[in-house]
Image 1 (cartoon, rainbow, N blue to C red):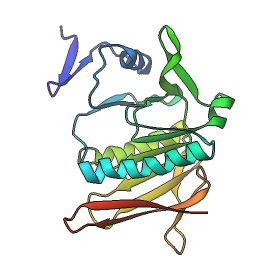
Image 2 (image 1 turned 90 degrees about the vertical axis):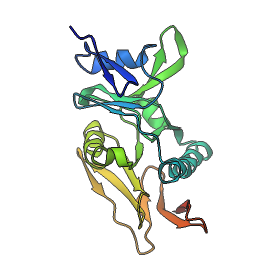
Image 3 (image 1 turned 45 degrees about the vertical axis):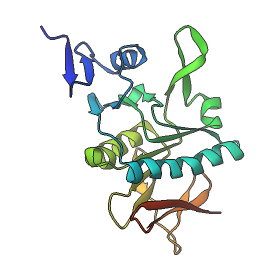
Length: 225
């Protein structure tokens, strides 16, 4: 009788994961893989072992994270995270590691988001439980439908206030801000200067990009009051 499923000879998934609670216990264990992105979305385990595109994904993520992190730090807004920060919302069967996450101090103070401590180390945290205020996903070749369909729906059901989606794989660049209304996202329309209002950051934002002489992308997140 099989006890695990081996994915691409890199990830060994236990066969006894009967739901989100089992999946979360696995993510907290020493057996959980250190590489790749492994999410639990509406009862399905989704594994992506593909390497990030250096510029269209990695560099763009760095530019967006730098701006969000600055807001979090300088304005005392909260905490920004990127890569391998797990967010779980048990009520909607969700446990994911988004590209970028922002959780406000208000969310932590009101208990909307709870810090999950590492076993035996109450001052070390390994997970955030509850819906953060902002999540950013950057589209990859290996996860187009997941990034544009499944995850936005899951984040909306979970109560994530704002969702950004960016795609730099081809021109023109795609950058969208979605605002939660009930349990559904609605895209925020850009203004005359092609800037989009972010309620979480309390400013208007827009993504700009141009290629240098070698054809390599340079990105900037434009911000206005």
